[in-house]
Length: 290
Image (tube, rainbow, N blue to C red; front, side):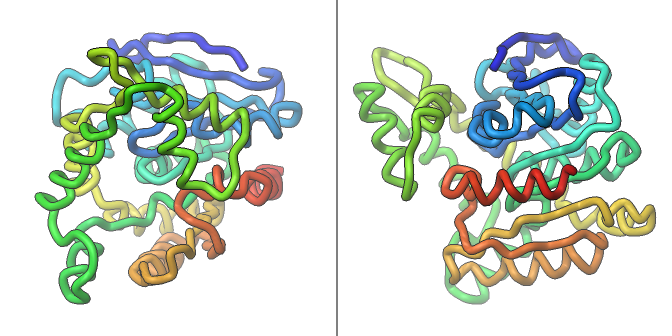
């Protein structure tokens, strides 16, 4: 793995690379609150077959934040990703994205699908926040508005504070049925030191901007464009099936399938399936991208 920085539309951006640049390129977009190392186990396993480029999205990891709040809209970030591709001189590549990164990937793909051979979404790119809020309100479950979500994310991100790196890692480790040295490295990348404390690298106000950007650009507004171009034929969505009570995911995944023409596979894992069971995801990536 090699780390470096590039300038993308005035934003200093950190990237990680695995493998031989002569191999097929896989561009990776991580989820909200994560970093380029979110895909570390997948990239390490497949680095002899592909050339992985994983980036810290704006205001994440060691990539600088945007100056304008409007730039955190999903469609704006997708344009920024295109600027990144121009800087890196990559096209005709595979796109691998998780969660928030999947939302960004969908908007990028809707405009630049000719650059992408195939796209694999890890439980992302199909969530419509307003639908989820309405579903939760009707069923008495979960958060029911943008305001409630903003408050939750603000408290969650800003409240993640520990005295030691060991405690920081331990708080993450308990969320998964397995652990590895690579996940340890990826988790350390999520921490920054503030006032001698180990804190989450993304502050709450950035999470708020990103979340607002998701609400402003739900993916279903570009579904028809993707289907009409037949670009949906090259999309695979891995839908998380655990926890089983989040039934709105089935509704949204079916909407995604029917309105984009993409393929949906329901996986008996959680939202962080590439950490929970990397071998399964590695096999899906290998099968999709070869």
